[in-house]
Structures are given as structure tokens and as C-alpha cells.
Length: 370
Image 1 (cartoon, one colour):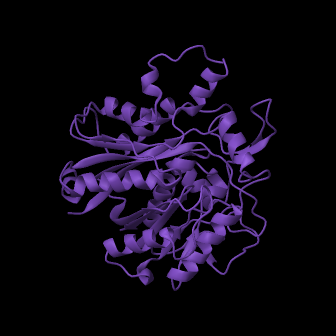
Image 2 (cartoon, rainbow, N blue to C red):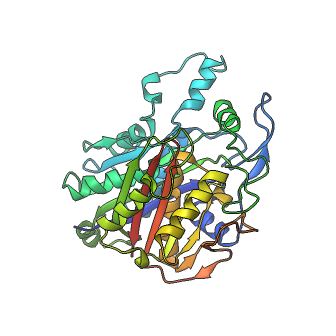
């Protein structure tokens, strides 16, 4: 039973799926320096609007676009839901803790399950509703769980993805304190990279059996071939070595897809622009793949934390659909011996990988094919 993707909704600091894709091809970035909170200095951020977005509003917006793209209408009471977030409604709780908000109505709905709850209620579903949280690997974990719901016969269709609105004083201060936050911009795989740039956004997908997609006579963006999920808890923020659990996740994903590394034409890297992550990813790719094109979209969109894997999956599917490899925006001085895409490159992409490597040793890799 093949699991295919028939609908995509995306929102980033560059706009919708189509505008984000076209902007990246034009080597544009939505990252701008902003000082939003008086107690903190200005930082480069990837924001959708002038003020921080609310996760509830963003979730509903992306969900509606996803359903429209897949030519679906509610109610969809047999559709599963797997939507995650690593920060959830933290910004709202910060406002409560600092007295900017006096109380939270329906506060039980502001726990990390809020995006999945919003989607489940909107769909009026009675099927499983799951809420994965695996740090920056959350988006691909959500897709993997949606894939499993279909492969095991629990559902014929699943709405899967992740949403993140991390622009809050605590999140900015925490990443700055760790020394992981950039002060000038995002430059994946560059010698001058200095850290990540926080960004808002998310992406959702309609996953369904190939048989159901055929009956509905709808477009198919691609197929999920397999995935790999591991966690090592090696360090709170530093990655393990090249033979660690990230490598195991990559090997898992290829084994489940019955593929050799040489079959992969493109890797959408996690590419956070931090010193440790980019070096670790470069070593992994050099160690495991004979020759493969690589890029990261975070120089354009910023790092959307738990939603980053979902966004990278959407952009990889667009690359497969349009036969273009997207450039690694922000890169000027390549630090590693990799085939990093510097400008838009025409290419036939039959199979691709997306990487997500989160703090705490959370690793997720997904294999996509035409």
C-alpha cells in the first residue's frame, strides 16, 4: 500500500507555499532585524507579520489551505490528525506569567495539543488525533506517524504536519543564552555562520492511500517511501558523532525504503547555520553518500523549530514537482566539501531525503519519491 501526498499548505515569513517556493528560487530571504521586546536587543527574525503570530490563527489558516489544495471539504470524520509543535502556546503562557494577560479562557486548550485539537475539531473527525513533540524533529515525526496510521489500516487519510510561533521573550533569551542565536543573519554551511534565526511558520499535508487518491482523481505531489526516527539523549544541544543515532536514522530510512545511498538525488538538510549542526551534517553526508546535491531553506525562512521538517518536506516536494533544486540562500563561502546548491539548478529528482536533527538527540529522516 503506497502512501501519497495530495495536498500541501504552508506559511512562512515569505508567505504561502507558492510565494515561499518562488522567493527561494529568486534567492530571497524573509529574515529581518527586529526589536520586539524592550528587555531584549534586536535580532534577525523570520516573522509572518509585524507582530508575533498566534499559533491558533496560523494553524487554522494552514489547515484550510491544505484542504483546498487537496480538493477536500469538511466534515472529514474518518481522517486522522497528526500535528505537532515544539513550543506550542508558550507565548500565551508567558503573557499570563508576566501579567500581560490576566487569565486564559479555556486554558486546557492551550497545552501542546492545541494545533491538533483545532484541526480535529475543524474536520469533525472521530479518527485518531495525535500530537508528537520531538523538538526540531517534530514535523517529520508527525509525517511518520501519519504514514503509520495509513500503513497499519487505521485510516485511509491523515492530515499531518507541524506549526510553530516561537517569537517570544523566553524563547529568544533561551537560545541567546545557549549561544545558538545569530545576531546578523542565517548562513547555512558558510564559514561565517554564527547561529540560527528563529522563524514562524508551518506546513501540513494530506496523506492518503494511492488507491484513494486515484479514486478521487487528484494531483499527487509524491510518495512517502520510508522514514527513520532515533533519539540518543547524548547531550542537551550538541549532536553525537558520525556513527551515532543521526546516522542510524538515515540508514533506517533507506533500509525501510529498500534504497541504497546512491539512489538519492537530493538532500534537504536541517542546515540551521549553527557551528555544530552544520559541521555534523556535512560529516554525515560525506560519510554516507557518494555524491548528492544538498541545500537548506533556513537562510530564507529562518528556523521554525518543530515545524522546520514539515516546511523542508513541502519544499522538497515542490523541487520534485518542478524539477528544480532550490539554492541555499545566505551561503557565500562554503565551509565543507559538499555539493551545496548555490543557484537554482534544473534536475530530475526521483528520490530525496529530508533531515531534521533536534536538541536532545532527536533525529528524524524521511524519504520521498515521485
